[in-house]
Each structure stands twice: as C-alpha cells, then as structure tokens.
Image 1 (cartoon, rainbow, N blue to C red):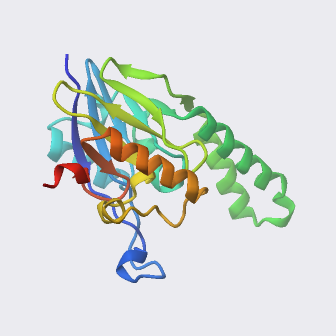
Image 2 (image 1 turned 180 degrees about the horizontal axis):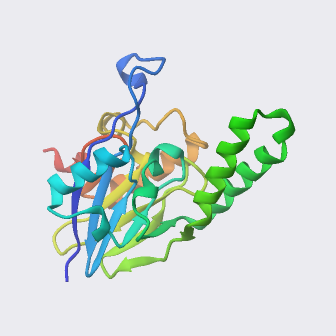
Length: 226
C-alpha cells in the first residue's frame, strides 16, 4: 500500500527575519502533517493547542485524534510537541539523539533547581515526564516511510522521507524552516549548528521533489519551478 500524506495545519514563525521582524509578533506553531503508511496514522509535530488541533484534524481528515496510532516529532523543541498530550493512545517517537540531548539538558537545568523558582522547577519536571513517554524512532514506519537524520536545527533533529511511486517527499521540520528560506538557500537563525543545517538543506534539495517545511506550507523544490 502506498504512503499518503496531508497537511493538517500550516505553521508560522513567531518572528521571521526575512520579513524584517526582529522580535516576536505572533504565536509560533509548527506545520503538522498526517502520514498514512499501511494501518498506521502518523501525526508529525502536533503543534496547535489541543482543541484547535482536534478541530483541524477533523476538518482535514474526517477522523478524530483517537485514530492516530503514532506521533513523530522532528524535534523536541516545545512548539513541535505542544499538544502531544492530546494523543495519549498513540506511541510517541523522536530521534534517539534528540531524546538523549533534551533529557540531559532538562535534567541539568533541574539540578540547578536551587537557583530556580518553584514554577520553573515544576515546569521542568513536567517536561521530563512528557519525555519519558517518547521512544527512539524506528528506521521505518513502512516501506515507503523512512526516518532520516536532518542535523543542524538540533544535533538530533529528524524528518520523514516518503517515497510513493511517482515522487519523493521530505517532511523536514526546521531543516527547511519556511519555503522562503529554502528559496533563498538560507537556514533558520535558531539552528544549533548553521553549517550542518546548510549541508542538510543542500542534501535535501538534491533528494526531494516536495518539501514540507517546519513552519510553512509544502513546496516543490527549485528544480521543479521551470
């Protein structure tokens, strides 16, 4: 059975430097994508608030969040997992390095709890409980849905490579933050490693026919523009 995908919601950046914005002017949310691979319904980056996500999911699929079998987060940055708790019946996946890195960061900050306020310490403990539910992602969710490393945005950021018969799609997360960034050959200024992110973007442009950016609508890669 061929793999299928649909954009559930189109994300946006809190501030887009390409538009001359230097401070947050809107609430950021990541692009959320549904991938169907056989019997699996994989929701990538559940980012809208839970009520909005449930409504949008119903509008775009005719189904409910209870039908989702898997959640895959391209990164564990909070905006990309904002509504993961609205999917308690699904298995939650992310890159193994991403999980290790974020857990170590949170635990290190919590070790400094004496210098933190009670609210901040409680928030860290809550985040760590959320991370306990995540598992290292498998190599594949199906024959035409593979998990691929996309380092640069974070060391452990990952994406999905979808290979139906006639096209190649990369669900890229912040490795392709917006279509305008891709068109200009630029990476997100928030990347952990800008040089690695640029190499990842260049490789992705050679590989993909279609890219689903982390905070924008899907796009054809530049070689398909003419």
